[in-house]
Amino acid sequence: MANWNGFFLTEHIEALRQDNIDSKRVAKPIVGEDELAEFNQRVHYAMEYGLPVEVTIWEAGMFTKVFGRVHYVDNIRNQLRVERMDGEGFERVNIADVTAVEVVED
Image (cartoon, rainbow, N blue to C red; front, side):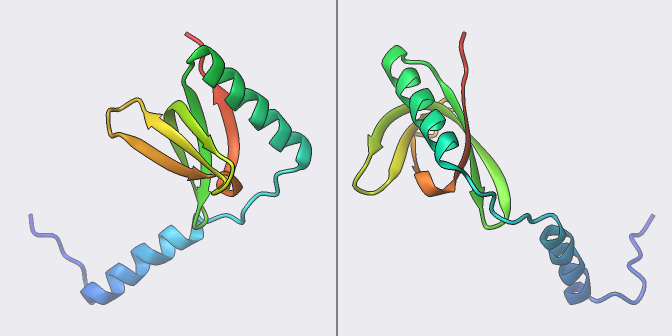
């Protein structure tokens, strides 16, 4: 059976898809000083014992998760360097974009 799009042009369909994506965007959450201190403790705990972490990041209105081991905390650039568990190498995460850190204990 043929896919009938009615009178919609491809530009209209793309605009509708983009509107759907834009409607799912959220404002950046405000992370307090206490939460930042707790994130810091979790990151250092995970680094000390070699445990993986799940870092939730806010990027352009959407939340993404990075799962891996924290390799290095770069205080000059305010970044975490996370060695991804899926074998994709390292990912640099801006500390300002972090909204949650969870230590995954085996």
